[in-house]
Image (cartoon, rainbow, N blue to C red; front, top):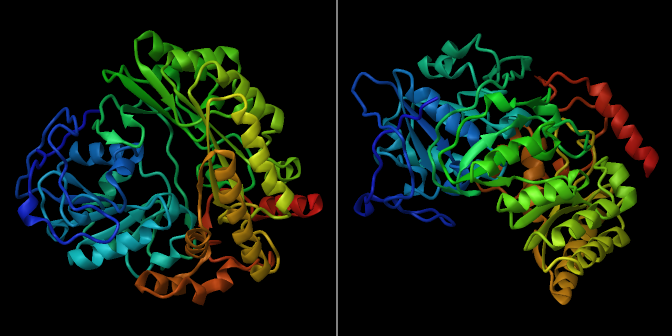
Length: 498
């Protein structure tokens, strides 16, 4: 599939709107992107805005946005992109056209914290066209945004792009699978088959560097109890090797929730390595790394091995069903010691049944890895108990008593900051406020939209409390194809472990 784009803007400093706090107002610099084709706007064309209410580096590294952009520009319509740090999200990257001049706006919501910028863009731009939101946050629970968008697309949009861009009013979207306007009692999530991969993409300086994004799989075969991916992208699908394209770029970023679970992962990496490419997987499960794969990744130019144990506690591994034990992490570190410059480890705190000893185990595990590898970095975030997962009923912080849980969570994070600094371990330790907000927005209903207007999250702390499994949930109207009784059985297993 070819990519068609309108000619990019190089310098528009004089017409830049005032920037929002936290974002830089600037156009893309010359040479930042490589665009294989160009498409010029004509008056009869329907104009579609593709809005990513976060930074360019994340948006250009999103394979879903690449697909939508290409699909629209292959049609009779024209699509231009908007990023939070380019013209403050109010003008397009390609022509600096104000959002208000477009007919349709697609917003991609990847993270709950993006809601704030999305609402700001809608208000500042004065956009009055058709507003449609999609992405994983919409698939989990769109209710907090119901007052800001005309419709939501629940699912994977392949196959429905043309239907969405031809609609001129919300009522014209009726009947399109996956559409939710707030009036439907139920909506069934749609999914797409993975066919031949796109041949060309926009190449920019994204989160994976300057590279070609290669999606080899969608969904996940694992059953981690904290993760929403399995539920909202079920069934897991792999893209066959013969559906993968020839790549001209020097670097390939392999995209999937768990790339090394692909049955032909080694063969795929080997294929591109033999073609002289650098290959960078988004992550590797520690228990799938062996000498052969470690050697292959070194040949592929990988310098940092990224793995996600989530917890260093054997008991909590059983609780979250991650199945990455101490021996897996240390085994991966031993393999990394002679091959990679750095190991990055991802952890969570605020798990149900978590004690301070479990948190101390994170530092101990990181120190063991540091004794084997030259550089170690850890990233620690509080758990967000996501909708559609077996943990959706627990309190934020992991304790049945919310006040105690929040107090302990703060102590755990403070401990990790202090001890990692003392141990000389690079660490990114998050604060809990941002993750409390994420929890409220992911588990909330229409009322929590007040936070997007400036209300304190403390007014909505009830959404952080444990939820009675007997109650109806705000997101129960979304049919992701699983049975709620299945999640309840998993939830009961957690309680038995504890």
